[in-house]
Length: 138
Image: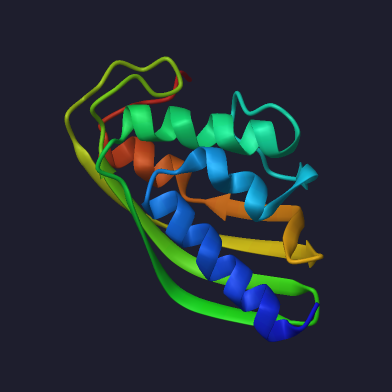
């Protein structure tokens, strides 16, 4: 696929997530996508991706993602973005704090046939927990 087609697919992914239409993620993720940095309880493949977003929305129903940088080179699309939300549901087994967070994150996705085939990512989870007032056990 072309660079422009992959960029368009990435934008579509963000639109699907923003609309909370997680069942549509199969339109932009390969069924056997490999998430090299999955969430704590995330299962494999596109079903695991859907599961992650459903759980994240349950914990942070007002979450937003805002892209700061979006670039592509061949089959790879890279984004730098911010995630924010208010902790209103259990997250990682932690009761809601009612506190707001905003963190930065990075993602690199390898596209094949206009779908994410591999995903690597990093989010400032420790920063998020600190903003929510959650301490990790020593």
